[in-house]
Length: 312
Image (cartoon, rainbow, N blue to C red; front, side, top):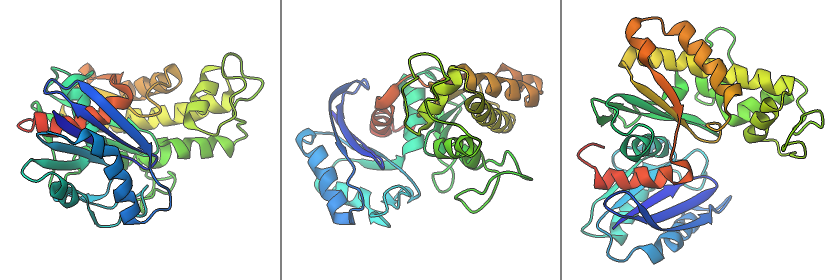
């Protein structure tokens, strides 16, 4: 068995994973908020402890940035860990077995290539569109790491250089600044969107949470501002994906994360923008599909870092 670990700003997850990539046993816990480094480490140890016996390796997906491949992590959404030696700490708990740490978005891409919608595809980009926008790149059937482990980070492809919003990276007009969930909801709220507007029809009428999921539901129900917000995000995604496929000659892009289930309000404008900008003949064969592995993708991808290390 492999111990797979998924470290996020809201939850810590771990699983025992079989050599075939099947999750056998899982544990999850909320990530302590406003906690110091050692409190966070103890919380992670409590999650992984019951799953630790007899594992042959440890694979970890964690938010970035990080020093790769050393696994010294400074996740933006976990302020208590700055320069935290996650890989070294885990190696101390599991002496004599391989321990690998990679970006969580890359683990999601790896999972989709290994056991999900990208299975059997040689050249693909796996994307995550959620609180942030990230990705991982597989070319020639192998994960491309890049010099610092950040290859495939499509969130900082510039899609609106002239009038685009400021980005957390310090630039402006990045895909992440337009399409990430909090940016979408802020844009919609600024234009009069009321979450779960009573004018919306269907199952989401009573939903009041200010989330991208609610925004997508209201767009499907016909709320004009929500439709415009999702269209704006979809077009930005389509433009970025067109650039990526011209650069990397891709067969497939998978989109996971909270917005991957948004449906036509997101994927319709995405496809329109993609076909508008991907005009070279080789780029027109590209397919864009929702990721297929759901909430277990991060754990499956983390396990693949060990179980399929010759590829990833």
